[in-house]
Length: 216
Picture 1 (cartoon, rainbow, N blue to C red):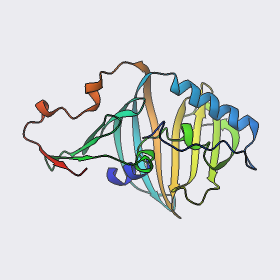
Picture 2 (picture 1 turned 90 degrees about the horizontal axis):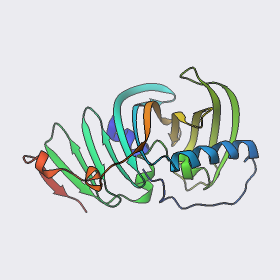
Picture 3 (picture 1 turned 60 degrees about the vertical axis):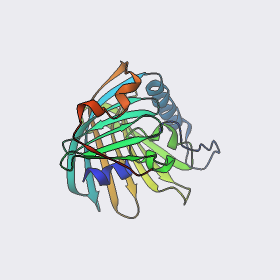
Picture 4 (picture 1 turned 90 degrees about the vertical axis):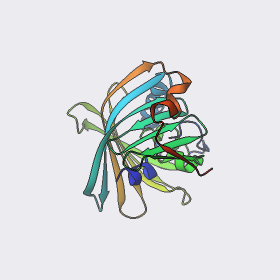
C-alpha cells in the first residue's frame, strides 16, 4: 500500500510555478494558502507523524502509519515496511523484508507525489480553489479548502485541505485519475528541527548486509 501512497504523496521547490490568475481563486482562500505556505517554509526542519489511507471511490482500501523528517528539498520517510532517504538528488528506498536498497534520481513529478505538503507550491500552478470554515476532522476549528485542477497536464486532479487556525495542515487528501485517492492525516509535527546532511542519506554502516541496486 505504501508504494501506492508514495506515488501520490516531495518537492517543496521543484514544481514549475504559474502565477496566472484564474476564475474561482478568491482572495480570502489565497491568503490562507499563502499564510500556511509561508509559515511552513520558515519552520526549518519538520518532523511529523502521519497516517496514509488509500481510497477507491472514497471507500478506504488500506492504510499505513509512518513518520517523516523534512528539511528543504530533503526528507526521510519511515513506515513499518519501508525506509526512504532523499538528499535533494538521490533517493534510497529500502523495503525491510527484501534486505535491499534501490537508488534512483526521481523526477520533479515523482517528488510531488511523496510530500503531504505538496500544496505549498502546487496551488499556484493551475488550480482553482474555494474555502469554507468550520470544525476539522481532528475537532479543531479552521479552514477547509478545495482545489481542482484547471490544467489537464497535472496528474493530481483534486486536493482537499484541512488547515487549523494557526495555519497548520491537519489533513491532506489528493485524487489522481477518476476515483483513486490518498488521504494523509497529520497526527503530530515539530518545527525548528536541525538535521545534519547525513540524516538524509542511506546509512551503509547501519545496514551492512543490505544489497544496493543502482537504478539511476
